[in-house]
Length: 148
Image (cartoon, rainbow, N blue to C red):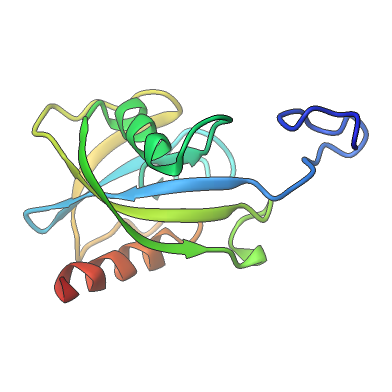
Protein backbone atom coordinates (compact mmCIF):
# COMPACT_ATOMS: atom_id res chain seq x y z
CA UNK A 1 0.00 0.00 0.00
CA UNK A 2 3.01 2.31 0.06
CA UNK A 3 2.23 3.71 -3.40
CA UNK A 4 -1.34 4.63 -2.47
CA UNK A 5 -1.97 8.18 -1.15
CA UNK A 6 -2.95 8.39 2.54
CA UNK A 7 -6.53 9.38 1.83
CA UNK A 8 -7.19 6.59 -0.70
CA UNK A 9 -8.47 3.08 -0.06
CA UNK A 10 -6.54 0.06 -1.26
CA UNK A 11 -8.20 -0.99 -4.54
CA UNK A 12 -7.78 -4.67 -3.62
CA UNK A 13 -8.99 -4.88 -0.02
CA UNK A 14 -10.73 -1.51 0.57
CA UNK A 15 -8.76 -0.75 3.72
CA UNK A 16 -6.75 2.31 4.60
CA UNK A 17 -3.16 2.02 5.81
CA UNK A 18 -4.15 2.95 9.39
CA UNK A 19 -7.20 2.97 11.61
CA UNK A 20 -9.48 5.95 11.05
CA UNK A 21 -10.13 8.65 13.63
CA UNK A 22 -13.50 10.23 14.25
CA UNK A 23 -14.91 12.72 16.72
CA UNK A 24 -18.25 12.98 18.48
CA UNK A 25 -19.85 15.96 20.19
CA UNK A 26 -21.90 15.53 23.35
CA UNK A 27 -24.15 18.61 23.53
CA UNK A 28 -26.11 18.88 26.80
CA UNK A 29 -28.23 21.89 27.70
CA UNK A 30 -30.96 22.24 30.35
CA UNK A 31 -30.97 18.48 31.04
CA UNK A 32 -31.45 17.74 27.33
CA UNK A 33 -29.04 16.24 24.82
CA UNK A 34 -28.89 16.96 21.11
CA UNK A 35 -28.79 13.77 19.02
CA UNK A 36 -28.78 13.08 15.31
CA UNK A 37 -30.40 10.21 13.46
CA UNK A 38 -27.68 8.61 11.36
CA UNK A 39 -28.15 8.57 7.61
CA UNK A 40 -25.22 6.29 6.82
CA UNK A 41 -23.98 2.88 7.85
CA UNK A 42 -22.99 1.60 10.26
CA UNK A 43 -26.14 1.98 12.35
CA UNK A 44 -28.21 3.88 9.78
CA UNK A 45 -31.46 5.20 11.36
CA UNK A 46 -30.03 4.85 14.89
CA UNK A 47 -29.58 7.89 17.11
CA UNK A 48 -26.17 9.16 18.14
CA UNK A 49 -24.13 12.19 18.94
CA UNK A 50 -23.11 14.47 16.05
CA UNK A 51 -19.72 13.59 14.65
CA UNK A 52 -17.63 12.25 11.84
CA UNK A 53 -14.20 11.53 10.48
CA UNK A 54 -11.25 13.86 10.99
CA UNK A 55 -10.30 15.33 7.62
CA UNK A 56 -6.80 15.66 6.23
CA UNK A 57 -5.06 18.83 7.43
CA UNK A 58 -7.74 19.29 10.13
CA UNK A 59 -7.39 19.22 13.92
CA UNK A 60 -9.89 17.24 15.97
CA UNK A 61 -11.20 20.53 17.38
CA UNK A 62 -11.77 21.84 13.86
CA UNK A 63 -13.53 18.58 13.02
CA UNK A 64 -15.96 18.81 15.94
CA UNK A 65 -16.82 22.41 15.00
CA UNK A 66 -17.38 21.44 11.35
CA UNK A 67 -19.38 18.29 12.10
CA UNK A 68 -21.70 20.00 14.61
CA UNK A 69 -22.42 22.74 12.06
CA UNK A 70 -22.98 20.24 9.22
CA UNK A 71 -25.21 17.88 11.19
CA UNK A 72 -27.17 20.28 13.42
CA UNK A 73 -26.82 23.77 11.94
CA UNK A 74 -25.45 25.08 15.26
CA UNK A 75 -22.19 26.93 15.93
CA UNK A 76 -19.77 25.66 18.58
CA UNK A 77 -18.72 28.05 21.35
CA UNK A 78 -16.35 25.78 23.27
CA UNK A 79 -15.09 22.20 23.49
CA UNK A 80 -13.72 20.06 26.32
CA UNK A 81 -12.14 16.67 25.81
CA UNK A 82 -14.14 13.84 27.43
CA UNK A 83 -12.08 10.87 26.28
CA UNK A 84 -10.54 8.71 23.59
CA UNK A 85 -12.27 5.43 22.70
CA UNK A 86 -10.01 2.99 20.90
CA UNK A 87 -11.34 -0.51 21.54
CA UNK A 88 -11.10 -2.32 18.18
CA UNK A 89 -14.60 -3.71 18.77
CA UNK A 90 -16.28 -0.28 19.12
CA UNK A 91 -16.70 0.14 15.34
CA UNK A 92 -16.79 -2.34 12.43
CA UNK A 93 -13.82 -0.54 10.82
CA UNK A 94 -11.95 -0.22 14.16
CA UNK A 95 -12.31 3.58 14.10
CA UNK A 96 -10.76 5.41 17.06
CA UNK A 97 -13.18 7.98 18.48
CA UNK A 98 -12.41 11.22 20.33
CA UNK A 99 -15.34 12.61 22.29
CA UNK A 100 -15.82 16.25 23.22
CA UNK A 101 -18.31 17.96 25.51
CA UNK A 102 -19.48 20.90 23.41
CA UNK A 103 -21.29 24.16 24.10
CA UNK A 104 -23.20 25.69 21.20
CA UNK A 105 -24.75 29.08 20.47
CA UNK A 106 -28.51 29.31 20.67
CA UNK A 107 -30.11 28.67 17.33
CA UNK A 108 -32.54 26.60 15.37
CA UNK A 109 -31.56 22.95 15.10
CA UNK A 110 -31.79 21.69 11.54
CA UNK A 111 -30.33 18.42 10.41
CA UNK A 112 -28.06 18.35 7.43
CA UNK A 113 -25.17 16.50 5.81
CA UNK A 114 -25.58 12.78 6.50
CA UNK A 115 -28.02 13.19 9.41
CA UNK A 116 -31.65 12.23 8.77
CA UNK A 117 -32.91 14.17 11.78
CA UNK A 118 -31.60 16.19 14.74
CA UNK A 119 -33.49 16.82 17.95
CA UNK A 120 -33.24 17.33 21.69
CA UNK A 121 -33.97 14.42 24.05
CA UNK A 122 -34.16 14.31 27.85
CA UNK A 123 -30.65 13.32 28.89
CA UNK A 124 -32.04 10.53 31.11
CA UNK A 125 -34.40 9.17 28.42
CA UNK A 126 -32.20 8.30 25.47
CA UNK A 127 -33.70 6.57 22.43
CA UNK A 128 -33.63 2.79 22.55
CA UNK A 129 -31.70 2.48 19.27
CA UNK A 130 -28.39 4.22 19.92
CA UNK A 131 -25.42 3.90 17.56
CA UNK A 132 -22.05 2.38 18.38
CA UNK A 133 -20.83 3.21 21.91
CA UNK A 134 -22.60 6.58 22.09
CA UNK A 135 -24.54 5.72 25.27
CA UNK A 136 -21.21 5.16 27.03
CA UNK A 137 -19.82 8.41 25.61
CA UNK A 138 -22.84 10.29 26.96
CA UNK A 139 -22.53 8.65 30.39
CA UNK A 140 -18.84 9.62 30.52
CA UNK A 141 -19.62 13.20 29.50
CA UNK A 142 -22.30 13.44 32.20
CA UNK A 143 -19.73 12.35 34.82
CA UNK A 144 -17.37 14.98 33.44
CA UNK A 145 -20.05 17.63 33.89
CA UNK A 146 -20.72 16.72 37.52
CA UNK A 147 -16.99 16.58 38.34
CA UNK A 148 -16.24 20.07 37.00
